[in-house]
Amino acid sequence: MSNQTKTVRVEKPRGTRDFLPDEMEKRRAVERTMRKIVESYGYREICTPTFEHLELFTLKSGEQIVEEIYAFKDKSGRNLALRPELTAPVMRVFVNDCAVMPRPLRFYYFANCFRYERPQKGRYREFWQFGVELIGSDKPESDAEVITLAYTILRELGLDFELHVGHVGILRNILKGIDAETSSKIFRLIDKNKIDELESFMLNSGLENVYDKVIAVIQAEDIDSLPDFAESDVEKLRRVCELLDVCGVDYSVNTRVVRGLDYYTGVVFEVYAENLGAQKQICGGGSYRLAHVFGGENVPSTGFAIGFDRVMEICSPEVQKPLKVAVVHANQLEESIKLATKLRKELRNVVVVTDVMGRSLKKQLSYFSEFDFAIIVGKREVERGYYTVKDMKSGKQEELELEELIEKLFEKTSAWQKEQKTN
Ligand code: HAM
Image (cartoon, rainbow, N blue to C red; front, side):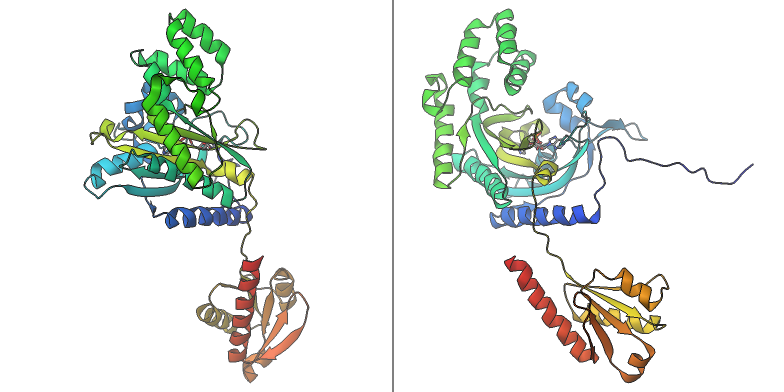
């Protein structure tokens, strides 16, 4: 029997991606901006498991959602699922652990989600959402805060987008009494803007009267032209819009925004970006009720999730690069490691790297040619207690004692950081 290991080239699973360091630096820069903004509004981070009991997602959405998610059995036969989103998990945490905390609660998350989709540009099987949930209020100011927050993040990132705001309750009211499957189909057709299909479906289902009302709502150009049979919902939408005006948010009212998920009950919104083709929705959210489905109180909440990967397609963030210093040596490995360790301890925000390849001094300098400085440690330097510092951009060299060297790098880093900030 051969004990040789079989070699096979293994590719990543369909719909997933690898992110190399240049891309990760950009993603982290965007993530930092998002965190900074939501934290300035008092939102605090929450983290939930990557997988949950399957029923967390089927309880509200029904069994058909199983087709769209990664559902599996573990070795003990439990039905589990990789999370397709985080609203249901956050509400589970709320019901189980936070129900008695003072309200409202402001949570945010940045996490990977999984959906069994047909992959294409901007649509992945593993993707990241940056989202918030504001739990405990059904006041228009909570909707306005959440919408303003999404808007502020996307503006701060310099994106071109349109924000559309509607109220799903207006249509839900009209469709009250119609069975869940039929109304869900109606919502799907509206969501996909398939109005011809909507007409034939509703007329064939004997829903002519309801159809006229639905059309009156989805064809309304603005709040004032909405029919008056949904007055309280229309008033709520109007108040949210007034508050958005107060916050300087640019939006349009769009009553065709009904969202793909079943838990929404009130004001809903979607954000569409230019230049993204079919998958142009970069953010979606609204107010919903879900806690009671998980055995909690029927608490009103509102939130959104930004499709982080779609944002990354159209975003070119400034990446702050640290000052990079190489400690190279001529047969002085230990001394170079000691010096590098000292420099890392003394200086913050500086990258200090040493050779681990046993290379000649010349080859080390060539490998580190993109660095800002190289500090050369040779026998002479060690004996006399100074280091040769080479500016890798200008090629200039100078000889400095340890204290002077640290001082110089410290000054360079401060100047560097200032320059990066003003860029
Ligand atoms: P959602 O609209 O299903 O809402 O997803 C939010 C965002 O995630 C979408 O607008 C889109 O940008 C992004 N997204 C969705 N699927 C994919 C995919 N396959 N690949 C890449 N990006 C994707 C929710 O998930 C709700 N939980 C939002 C929410 C929070 N509502 C209230 N609170």
